[in-house]
Length: 239
Image (cartoon, rainbow, N blue to C red; front, side, top):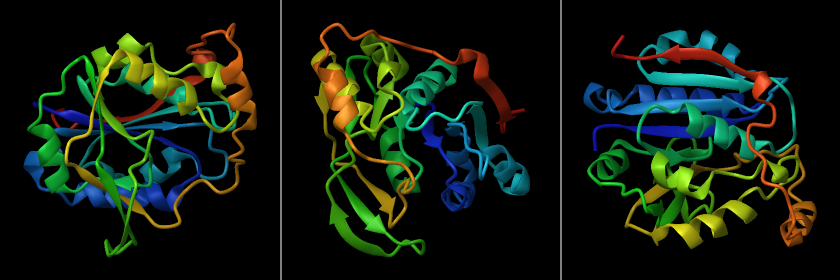
């Protein structure tokens, strides 16, 4: 594989973003030319991602990194963040991740050696819970909304339905749809997740989206707030 994008949505997770920047910037130059970091700031008010990138610009200059912002603060607007990312990402292959999930050089080399077909979605075998010093605390089940896919496959599924934005559980619709259209594979790849790192100030109640899922006449919405999309940062090592 020539290159791949690691994409994750961002929402006020300042320390995690700094950890990601430091983590990837320390990798060898050969792999840094192959990986692209793509971030969508989902309307952060307290800690906008742009300010963090500018405050850590020496580190960002070691990376291929792009930041878009949806300049409206909608809770759990990850479906729109995902659709925006896959519309703008330039590499064929993507790791759809979360900001607390980390990929080592070994894991990335493993993924880069694989051919990601346009009829497949690849899920991780398991996760390791780690602390900020990379100490392994325990093994976990894999994250459901963390996967490897190419853009053609994502487009076959038609992306996420933004009708489910605003409440927790956007993958309740997307993942079953993806698995009904694409071939699900689980290669022997283990990723890592940081301890105590999830979004804590938003409700994780699934009630609203479970009810929406029952609606057989529900609309399919994409790019609802496209007038609020802003490209804020774009650094390419080849430039």
